[in-house]
Every structure is written in structure tokens, then in C-alpha cells.
Amino acid sequence: MSTPSMTLFHSPSSPFVRKVMVLLHETGQLDRVATNTVTVSPVSPDSGLNQDNPAGKLPALRLADGSVLHDSRVILDYLDHQHTGTPLIPREVPARWRRLTLASLADAILDAAVLIRYETFLRPAEKHWDLWLENQQEKIERTLAYLERDGIKELSSSFDIAAISVACALGYLDFRMPTLGWRARQPQLAQWYAEVSQRPSLKATEPPTA
Ligand code: 99T
Image (cartoon, rainbow, N blue to C red; front, side, top):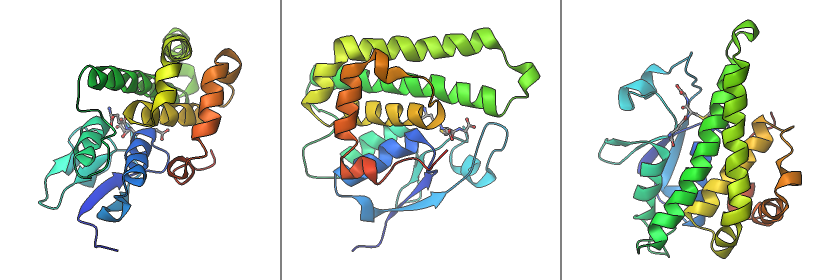
């Protein structure tokens, strides 16, 4: 086992960090990265993280030369250039644009779900804005419906950036929004997710029990 040359600012509950960890598993690069676990939220920033990443968000990746990459999309792209196997972000177009667009939809689910999490968990109950929460949830539901209708065949065809991102998004919904009930409305996505969840990379990176 080699000494890690990179450090990942990490949290086990972050789905964005999880995407990075899954890619490290899938590409055999786990031993190149040490993890530095940080607890952070918009109302409790971490000064060490802020120094390296002024947006104060996880993940960030410190490289051997001391430079720092963020956000998860940049880190994934970087790490996908550091192994010799089949790229998980296709290099050829138009596959590249389509797979990155599917991955971006997964990130859109995550952005909305994390905003809901912060609004409901961090904000005092009397300040909750129901219309805003409903519209964030509708973003999630529209995107899941799109993936069921128009994305499922592509997701099933390869475990790449699109599949990693969607799997991490579904895992986060189960973790933070367990009563959403998406499986009843998206049975094909549910079947696909049940299968890919058995991959060692996803099993090893499951979020902690909520
Ligand atoms: O917003 C903050 O100040 C702290 N939040 C984060 O660092 C979240 C952690 S998910 N990360 C992001 O929002 C990163 C998004 C970015 N576009 C990327 O990296 O792709 C924690 C969720 C939870 O604990 O429930």
C-alpha cells in the first residue's frame, strides 16, 4: 500500500463526498487519498476548510503540491484522469455531454434535497417557508420522473459518472427524506438502484444511520 499523496475534506453524510469515494473505489485509487473528516454547515463553517475552499463546502481535495480542487464535479474529473482504466467520464462526444447532463440532474436532486435539509433542520420552525420547500421537493420529483422515463436505459448501460451520481442522489433521499416514497412512482429506477446498491463501492460508502 502506497502513502496517500492527496487529502480529501470529507464527511460521511455528504452525498457529494460519496460520489468522490465511489469513484476512488471503482478506479482502484483509494490508497492515494487520505480523508480529513470535517463537520460543516452554512451556519457552522470550518475555518480550516474555508482557507482552502472559500465557499466552505465539502468536498475539497488537496493535491500533493498543496493546491486544492473543488467542487465534487472538478474533483471527479481530476481523479478520472489519474487512472488507466476505462474513464468513468467519457472523453468522446456526444456521450460525454449526455452522461455529464445526467450527472448534473442527479446533482440538481442533491442541491434541492440539501436545501430542504438545511431549511428544516437548521432553520427555526417558525421561519420555515412552506412554498419554497414545496418547490424544492417538486424539483426532486420532476427530476426523478424524468430519470424514470428518459434516463433509465442509459443508467443501466454503464456504471459511470451518470450512474454514480444518480445512485448517490437516491441514497441521500433515503438517508434524509425517507418518507418521500419515490420507489412507488419510479419502479424501474428502484429496481436499478436495488441492483447497483450491491456494488462494493456503494456498500462501503453508505451514509451513517440518520
Ligand atoms: O453550504 C455549506 O456551507 C456547507 N455545505 C456543504 O459543504 C455541502 C455538504 S452536503 N456540500 C455541498 O453543498 C457541495 C455542493 C457542490 N456543488 C459540490 O461539491 O458538488 C451535506 C449534506 C448533509 O449533511 O445532509
